[in-house]
Amino acid sequence: MRKDNSSFKTEFLSEAGNFIENRDYFAYVELDDMACWVAVDGCDTDTEVNSAEMAVQCVLENFSEQPTMSRRKLREYVLEAHEWLRYESRRVRLKASIIVVVTDYTRIVWAVAGNARLYHFRGGRLLARSKDTSLAQTMADRGNLSESAVDRHEERHNLLQYLGNPEGCEPFLSKKTPLHDGDVLLLATQGLWEGVDVPEMLDALEEAQEPSQLVDVLEDVLLSKQRASIGNYTAAAVYADKVYKEDKKKRSKWIKRIAIAMIPVLIAGGMAIYFKGRAAARVAESVVNMQEYGSNGDTYVEEQNYAQAMKSYSEARNEAKKIKDKLHVALYGKSYKKAELIVAGDDFLKDGKYDKALTQYKKAKEETKGDDKYDPKQLDQRIASIDEYIRIGETVQKADLQAESRDYQAALLLYREAHKAALNVSYSGVKDIKTKLDDMEAKIAELEKEQKKLQAESLEKQGNRNLAAGKYAAAIDAFSQSQAVYQEIGMLESVLKLERSITKAEDKLNPIPPASAAGAGGAGQGGSGGELPPPANDSGNAN
Image (cartoon, rainbow, N blue to C red; front, side):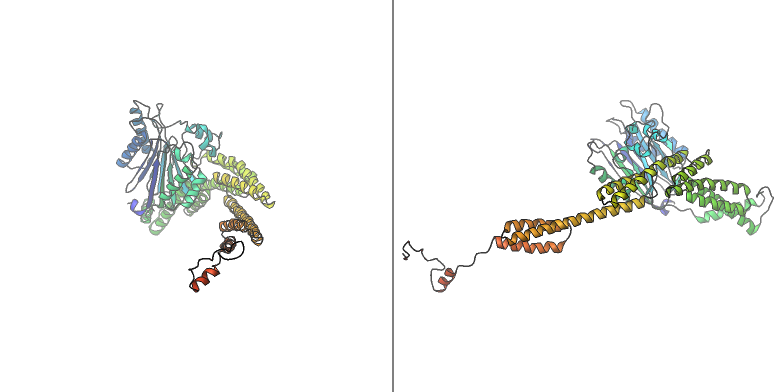
């Protein structure tokens, strides 16, 4: 069973915000060989039924009866939930946004209708995000709006596809995406992602070691902004600590089957070659390797990991050469070339050679035209990102100049601006910018500490002058202020030193009166136990 040989952990929270009722709903089911997570944002105001709960229930019931990774079946499950909402729309038109994620513990596929979202993180970076079926997202897809602007655009609530739509619903179905150990999935409704942007999610991900910690941190970030209105919000985190690995023994069985099947067939460009024994097994193994490497290359392309795709296509081509399969040598060579163009463009972009990067991306767009594995919109985004890369580079240069002129606060603001922009476009030099940002924050902190130290020393000297002049109350006040500053910057030795100075000044301000000599002597001579003698009269004679 796949579930027993993998490790997936899920935690979630779903709150009403500052509304009376929570119209969001989340639930999931983990079966032996598959799992399904569903988050729904109810967009209606019906007080008698919960459209989000109805949609989740419908999808999970169908999935539990017939678990599947089929995009066609998954579409059917979503459409059945859509039809149920339409049927129940008697008093109020029911409508909802939905995100459904299904896994076989090795890969995921998702369906979305509306603006409930899936974020897929890997290695501390955002690997993929589901796209809303909204007017704002459509504008971004057409190049009329940047991806980073979708979350704040006024048309983000204008849904073109959603459950309960009287004009029909056509959900978006993703391709199957492989999972790696350590991947994190985040399902979020609009109330969450509107208040927590991607850089903040990445910071939370870095801080959280468990899914429960991640959803708690995301909620803290959302609430800390103290927005006037907080809608219903849901966050469900899935940590894929260990994904299911295919049994290598099954692969050996396939090699044997292909070896047997190849004995009577024609291969290698029309030459009739019959293989027996070990020779057939070696050729069969090369065929399996070729297909496996080629499939891996296709998967890496879909993940936009073009460097790994190049490597896999190269290995597939080498296996094809071993069996003299000229057709596949040419095919995998062409696949290699497509990925190579994009990698070359990325390398030029990383090195700041923007003109060369633009040339490579345009060639890649032409070469990949009609190839379903490549999304032309992704290449368009790469081309468009060159302007953003130039802007980030210029911002960093300005920050460097400000740092050189010792205007550290101005440099800090510019580094922060560049770092945020770099995270949004996966800028290759984001780590260098983060290092400069951290260095600048440390330098400013050190300068602030030095300034506070000078302030504390000045107050301490002022206290010493007041003490010498007999102004004890003023000395105590100056010493106390100095001590507080030293305490703030962690100079504990100076704090203790000033404690002694304060005590000394207090002793001067409020001296302890000496014991009476007469009182002490009278007691010793059998007198009145310390009573003072009567005062003298005006003539100086005792009464």
